[in-house]
Image (cartoon, rainbow, N blue to C red; front, side, top):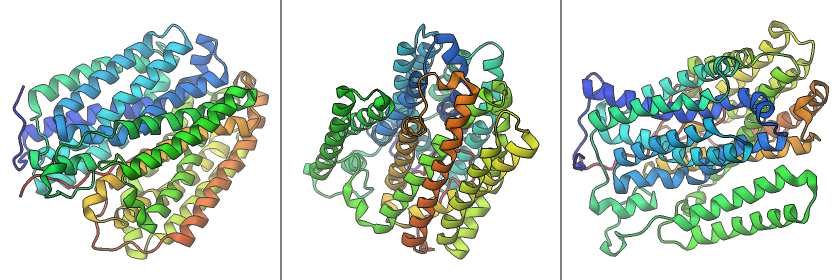
Length: 513
């Protein structure tokens, strides 16, 4: 294995090595992105094949999001300490093995467990792919390389539902997981042959572990460990809260105890993060009111979007009668709008300030979700589905890039990567809670997805809830968001099609100049 490098990275985009690095990172991150988007169109087929109720289908989605949201901050720092290529390759292999287990799962219990393991792999490879770009490319090419990584990832997000629907309708839902195995083999092979190893210099270890980007001079702090206790408590809090929401319709003592345990684990997480010398999520970053406000807005916006895309993929198949391929293809306009116009939206926000886009965008998205009330058994794609999705897409174009611009402007440059990671994890946690809570709030029972009429009634109750949550986010943005400082970091992921999470921005490069 190559010795790790601490030197200034020199790869250029136009060079063969630069192209191999880009290919490797895009392949790796696309696997995680594809599985988080195509799973929704496969759910009815999974439920029918494995004789599962709605609760089990919720866990099929949430098990992945749970471990990914809980561990993505921790995963982002492992490569700096142990080698970025090493951790990235480990994440790809882990993800592939978990995908194989998903594809071979004989029952829902095995599938849900394997999905949770997939999330662990995703938490290693998703930030790891971005870290490889930061560590490998020359500073003059780094921003463009990150932009290409983000853009190709967005193309993957657009192709994902189409490809997933084709696989589900053709060889079967198991192939949306099994396809990851050859992709992983190619990714690992390229990485080991063409991607140089790198890690943070020894004198930077403490800064890497803390995620602050500042290199302390005290040598006694250089050997801090990783915040495993914080990651475990965060995962436990999310898991118990999700279990309580998903199982709440049963009203058992176990549900009540889970809810109480989730709250207790949440308080314990805050206590540990406050008192550890090297926290996974330093609470001091929330001293910025703007940063706190943007994350509250993020919770509202991505909770609504996570619930919407989960339910809409089911609505189009169960109620309207689309095949998995048709349902996946139907969602493409939203992703295409994001890919084409998200960079321009960020530029507009930098000229006029983020408050208007962050207020108008959620309201426009909410209007599109209310338009989805027309999508029922007799819905026309051109007359009913497409107009609603175009309005939703226009709203998302309006707020996603300005959200990132404002987030990065709310912290100093040394904390940009940490801020982006926290924001990304918050969005994933919000989607996790929404998928758990919306069926409960709309009165869906475990067999609701087997009846078009019953599911349609619940869907009609869910859309106003999603719209109302977006309205709360718009009000929060209008009241709390100030203008973004023009001299602060600007997003490098300027073009993307990731619908249920904000783009993950790189942390500042720590190589010596």
